[in-house]
Image 1 (cartoon, one colour):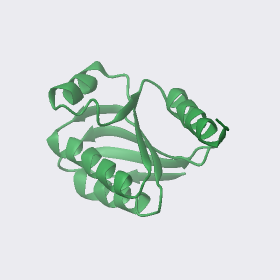
Image 2 (image 1 turned 180 degrees about the horizontal axis):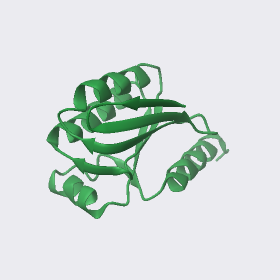
Image 3 (image 1 turned 90 degrees about the horizontal axis):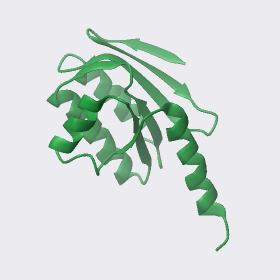
Length: 130
């Protein structure tokens, strides 16, 4: 587990039992956080088929630059044939995604267990015979 601190945010990186990388973001995702967070997410998404879960439940604020970091990570992961899942139960953040027409772009789950369970179901469906 790696703990990292920026001026207004903290993020922790862990490896889930299924092999997914879970990044738990805490605090504010704003202009002050973008450079360090972008560099961290770029490193995590530099591999082939990255599988990343961003746990946003402890995030207290997100501005357009924070949303831009999520979009950049999403594009990088898709270009490498990977998967990005967001975890949040925050209605304001879900509304932000709807208002920016990004709600259909991201896979959003209310809890970490649901996001990781969905990974297992997708893997099982991909390997089961028709």
